[in-house]
Length: 397
Image 1: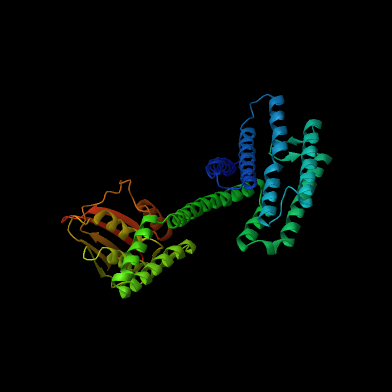
Image 2: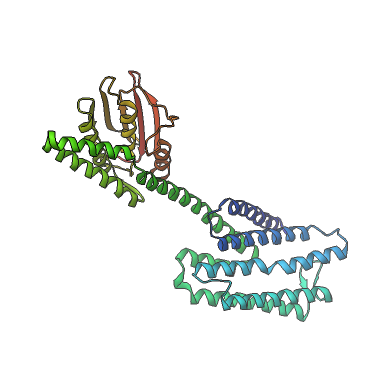
């Protein structure tokens, strides 16, 4: 074996070990695909490691060397058969119940049996120049290997419409490559899939937390708003109508956010925030003042980003016994994107406060990072109060 062969086998071992670690970490993968990935990576590592051991075991006693050859013969076809099982799963078929999979396993068992008989009978031998010599058992073993490849190609042609273009190319290369290259390719693809699945899992978890947060909207806020509307109906019916309209828009925006899986235009989130603040200003007349300076609204952010931050400012900054609360919302273009800032003149709010509103700031930070590569920072204002800064990259007028 040359240095290139050693390098390829070592790569197969390393990729397999890395894939095993990722598979055990990715607990969200369904049981059967996860078991299949573990089987592919495990047998790939065992086969490549055994090939490395056999290639460097010239000084071992002949009986031990023959035992290593027998184990290698037993393991070698297994990764390829598992790859074919993965191919069937990608086609939407249950490989455990597939007739063509049973044919492949039968051919694989026959191939292993022919190899073992050839080893034990002494027909298989390695000449000094490195060439394999053998009789009828070697011919049978090679013929069975060719039959397995033919079945693979036939299955690929028949099921090509069930696969994506990437899958078709990958499996075509797999079926024409050597066993080691085949395993490395599948290992790389599976590792990429596990990483992609991990990212999707984080996005899905953030989206589910968003839905839970919306469903757990503060009951006392709804109760207090309805009570304010009740008294306004007698004191100022026209104002009561406006508050009902703002409150209705606020509720609609909250419940609509449940169905939002991606980012939304900032203008929608701004409208949601205005509706919330209109309700709060009606409740705390003369105590809450808001200023908007948002020349740029042509960018996208996750749903329920700005409104919960403003709600934080009102909840922690508004106190009837203190000075009126001033809240400012601004947007500013920068070289790399848009900066969104929310400032208040309240007593200040620490991110570690346990008495947080229905939507936590760390959740907003996580969704910003995952969904649009944004950041969120919280700092005190020099004149008192809190400043929350969101940066959304890549968005300009």
